[in-house]
Image (tube, rainbow, N blue to C red):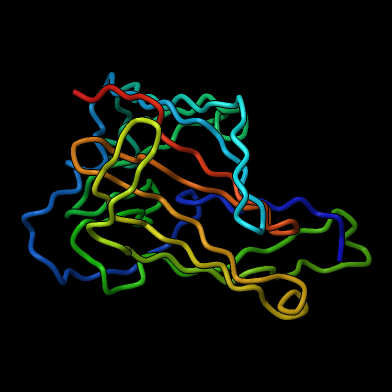
Length: 216
């Protein structure tokens, strides 16, 4: 296998189809908190394959900077300060109780815990295209999960629901890699309180936990 450092970024890999199966008393806006001026600060921990957590001195400060119009729809711009995420903002909007990206991918819903919201695959593109073809590494899907789960992070203990990603290795990678999970835990009136990313070739997980926040 090529020496490829491949990161599966939870909540940033997106496709969707949907239908509602719960009460509409829950509202997306209460969980994503996209008002201008809101911010969240997360601290990074690395978790190895044995579940041993190492807390680092790396932080990701996330803030809502305002709105932008894309294809006639108004989206909120959400910026990260950590290097990997900081080049462009996340552009998001609340549409029919789903958190939606500009290409229509549905990224979160507090009312649909039965349907697969995202289903797609990851492809490695080799630089030497004369000898190697692109290769499918993982098939993946995202669903809402664990409604009502209590989760403790440095900022406190919250009742959450999880936008959970499952990455299943494909083909020749099936024997070398294991199924990987990513998690995006949202708390009502707070926002995203913990999220994770995983390096596929090492299976070391990067977990970002909420340290402090301000929501209007």
